[in-house]
Image 1: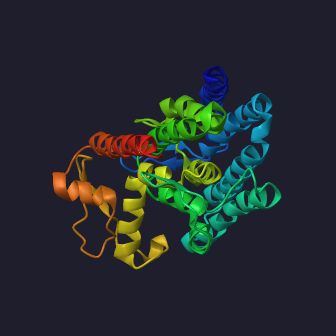
Image 2: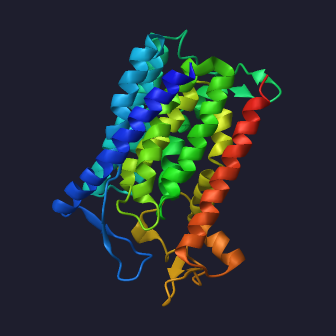
Length: 333
């Protein structure tokens, strides 16, 4: 019932809301801060907000399991995938990993999902994605070939667009809501319950990361949230809905990797895709060799603008793609 979903989301939201400032204070105390490069004076902001998101989702996931014991295989798969992604991210937050190493490691987020399928094949079903008009497909070889991207893909593309205050939690919150709608329509409130910990955590966390951010997400945050969405989509067979909801993130990833010829380390990049002007407006880079990105494309089309305007456009694109994803859910027989 909806009361269970609301209870789990409320627990996650309240935990995230009250835990985040405490974690930010602790991170500042240990000097774990990063400059907010798009603001005057480049203020130092506490880092690794993923710790707060994990703190909120774990107890809520336990409550979800208590309220829906039959969800055990899928809850374990999602939680284990999220913790794996968080672990990779927190290591990168404190000791920077190379882009190629980090991306390769995120493939391991799929291991818990595959393990759940092997142990509970009737509850974690592979190769049966739900798509509009056609309903449930039955694919085997192609699905297994694409499966390594199912969890690692969302984790990495969400991480790549996490460059402005509030964009990551806002866009993934709308994506999680779209997945919740799809889960409810295809599996009832028990299935939707799997998304409640993430929805609540992002609602409680967002006020502290929105512009001007009082804590930055770090890779621990963006990788965790991306893996959670990817794992939830797989165990619920809602891969197509997740694909639509994350279109801005996917587009950004394609633009960046396509413009530089695949994965590159920061030191290999020939400039930054955007520039900060003396008045702190953002502009598309004048360096033709700099990577293309969704943000650079927006600035090239609309001209220089303040950071908040860029954020509004990115969040709006996320909301639009998530709305289309929700509509897609209604079109699945």
